[in-house]
Image (cartoon, rainbow, N blue to C red):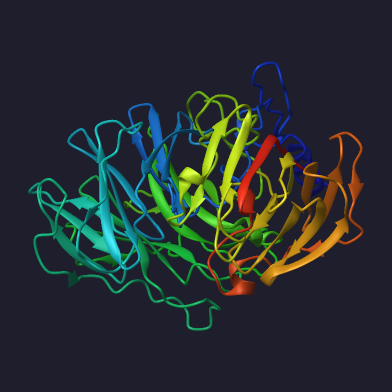
Length: 514
């Protein structure tokens, strides 16, 4: 009976997990129903960040927390999030405005009143700096070293180092902007049982924490994707940043050991304390039934043992409500709907790789897309990060003859689905350039809507934005993820224009689904 009550409480919590947020501009209003981890009853429910916010790096600065994460090929990159309770997060800046490659696993730190973000991209490692997390941030500085997943540490003599993947370390200059010596190997990782089913050994994500005379090295092993039981968080400690390292008797600190768990491939942890002296670990994981959204950000409490080790307390379940950390809530999430008022493209929008952002301008209550190439082989969409497992987008599309404009769920240039208006015809788009016409003779002005309804693609069009017709074709979206396609990416909603001319997008609406 007790277990049934606990399960029922969990279900009731799930039904409160939407922030009924009004995206309001100049009198227009739309309820986005974005996911929110804060239950409003002193607890939270994982994930704290719904969306592909993989490889989180978090720091506390007084009563404020700042976080960034892998931004991959999104530009601008390295979104800076601010919180005062580790659960509610607001975007405040982007730290990277110059494309240097796909950005993985950053490490955000503060040293002598300067904020640094160290990050790998395309076989190199870079650093950006700022005097305030809200910016402005510097241009990226190339550190001229390989490996991935840098983790910053300061030795007892004040000298600075970066731990890197594979158990390596490299010295830094006093200003942290250059490497001053050779990379050396100092740590072999933790040997897990040989019968564990993982993707690979893959010693990655070194994050350093100094506490009570010990340096704690928190790392990831087991591979980032692969089987549900891959990936984990491990810990080791030493009196110096260089070792010798003693592995924790509580390893793995975090690991999913079951194929039927809700959260799978959990790993890549960062420790952070709260002002009341308590400790937490922020990490990521896939939701087993929804890999298409990527690796989401999770949070668990940490306890310290009398002999100086840390672990997740017994009885804490990542699937059930957990008591919130101390602190006040900021406005959580990012507005995704857009009426395109003003003259500046909203913070929610990203271009992909080194795409020409000047093709997308805001004027006259519309997003104007300058078209001079073919979608998707020669041009990218403008995309945003969904903040629900399942969601829909709709917009008013104006596509004159010779152009094509529409809405997409985009994985990469080969894998995508959506709807478009081309020469007066409403078409459904399929991977590898596939296209089917569903209506013709509609002119250059229609409303389109596409919905990711529990992995079913539903497509609609309208001539007035009120009465909708649904295409009699439904496609499965559940396979649009890394394990199925072998390409890194996630399914992202977006808008596009192609051909020759100018496509306009008006009244873009995002709506989260139950």
